[in-house]
Image (cartoon, rainbow, N blue to C red; front, side, top):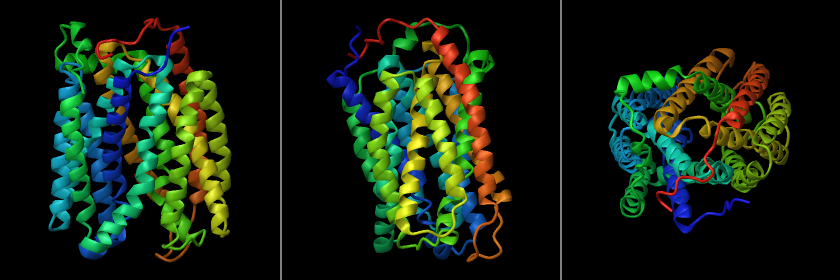
Length: 415
């Protein structure tokens, strides 16, 4: 039986990828709790704030597509450092923004660099870890999302209330600079993919990866996975406050409890994904999530503890979908295509999410800013249908992975 335990260096790589993901996700997540402060400080309306938020997602998606052709042409360590430094500069501009237009420009810059970091991290993971290990790796790396929920809202509001809305961005800059220095010193070059010579230039490489039928199945699956989440996420807080009568003071508790539960659930799902069939775990998680979404979106005012329990159960289903599906997606591309594949995959995820958010905005109706949201259950039903379609697409991905010859051992260049 092949050994699937982690070496000390692999553990370091997991930690570095996880914490870079944490800073990137925190940078995105911190905009939500700052919404009220930003609208009042910059004298902007909700529509303008929405543009400030979505500008990051769309620029991140575009940058991923532009970077795809270059993603397999360089040492992945150098690529990670380049985009991470760009992300730090963009976040610094956010922390120094004197007005709304400067902030939007800074968010675009941040998205252009930050949107590629996730795909580079996934390529590094795929190069270094065997498929039998990736469930646990993804479970750990994706804890950055949960950690951003636990830390992003409370810390972001805490610093913003003391020093103003610029402070959370400057905090992220300081943390990211420290991480950059650790990566520079401790992460080894990742160049094994460069040994697989290809005569294709940057544009031909991009076109080649985009045209592969097996890759297209994975791209479609990733896009739909993102759509299901982004349909509901932008209006989650508004629904909790206006429909469930959760107060502004209780909202951080809701995010924190959900985030802490995710920190516990994610590693468990990751281990289960490595131990059992990933597609079966995904299917179970999807069906569980569908049931919980329909229940949650049709809720009327209930006590806070009921909302907390339902949120935890809902996110358990969502995490049981994302971790095994992400692990399967990483097994699709060949080594020489991984960087481009991950960049395109990440881009489609961002763009699909942005489109879903815009679409959801047309579905949701609110008579005034204090009245309950209408048609939120409609978003729940649409998300449920999308999740059912995802099961079919991920099944196709699973078949492709099972029929694909896999190396007996993970790349040992850095072990």
